[in-house]
Amino acid sequence: MEDARRLNDPGLFANGDPDAVFKQLRREDPVHWTETNLRHGFWSITKLEDVREVYRDHVTFSTEQGPGPLPATREAEDHEDPLGDQPSLVGIDEPRHTQMRKAFNPLFLPRAVARYEESGRKLVAEIIDDVLPRGECDFVTDIATRLPMAIICDMMKVPRQNWKELFDWANMAMGADDPQYQIGTPIQTKEFGYGSIFRYTLGMGLERRGGHENDLMSTIANANVQGHPLHQGEIGGNGFMFVIGGLETTRNAISGGMLELMRNPAELARLRADRSLLPKAVEEIVRWTSPITHLTRIATRDAELRGRKIRKGDWVVVWNISANRDEDILYDPYRFDVGRTPNEHIGFGFGVHFCLGVHLARLELRLMLEQLLERMPDLELAGEVTRLHSTLVAGIKSMPVKFTPRRAAA
Image (cartoon, rainbow, N blue to C red; front, top):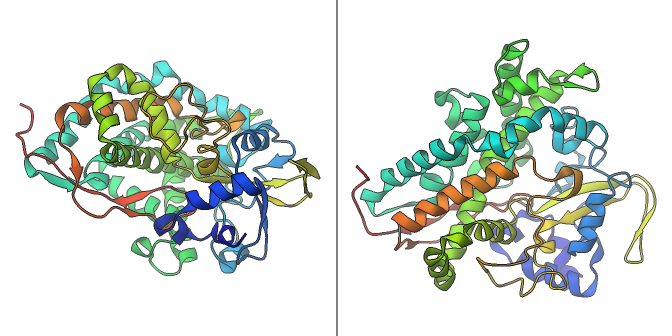
């Protein structure tokens, strides 16, 4: 299947049509041995039921032993993962995963996240106030990025003067294959972005170790898991994870969701007329955008899936972006439906690795949608949408929009 050979090509996700590739795979070969330009082939798991099975069977399909995100080149394939010895919550297996998760979980429970309801609403109002008089802006950088950045930096108690640095480093780490963010080769760019965030968050954590504050970095630094404090690699690794989770995924869901609402004016009007649909619209946005397109696992023993023989040591790639369009599970999956019920998406993951920040992400999306619907009723595209060159992050880099200029709220 020739098109499947491009599944590790960032250009396919920036300028191509990965949906067409996945539709063919789901129909013809849903557990597909995928040969690319890499030395390693890998299994592409494309249907929702099978993706869930791989996520569920964390004994057979290990994240801890896996290769990390799909490399784009043989050079990247041969290069050591920059966080390989700096494990975070998303990169470890059971039982340590669940015990570490419990240490972080109190800050992400609904009652903890609810404290951002009022301040988040005020922040969204300020964000919109800043652009309303202009009549145009870049939706990604001027609107979508600012809310998740402010909230995750507040949770981690990152000084305001360092926010821009974290944002730039995150773009380098997750967009290393995109020429816009490169400071050398893709590997050099990725290492600089990863390393900068790792060192910064580790420094914060070590400064706060032994203290009694309840911010996120203090919680990480003082966590006790299986009777021992986290080592430095885990402090910096988890710091990196929360920066990326906080900055990247939600801003891309906000941007991609608003793009689809503008492309579907009937759904936009439906949502504006019935705000009770907001929770369902949030879930549909996450399904539609699939901010993390895939995760990789490695088979720890021989296994079988849909009659295909998976051997110990094989790479297994679960394609969330494909599973969230599975025609056998989701009714009319290529229709953007703000009232979709049920909505069995896996945009937040599945199983023990289900997204820890799900309540926060839902809150941020809802707060942003509420005020965009109310205060920017004629928002529309005003130029070309550019997407990130990445196989991992379904990101929008730039989305020019226009609207009737208005005075900011008093």
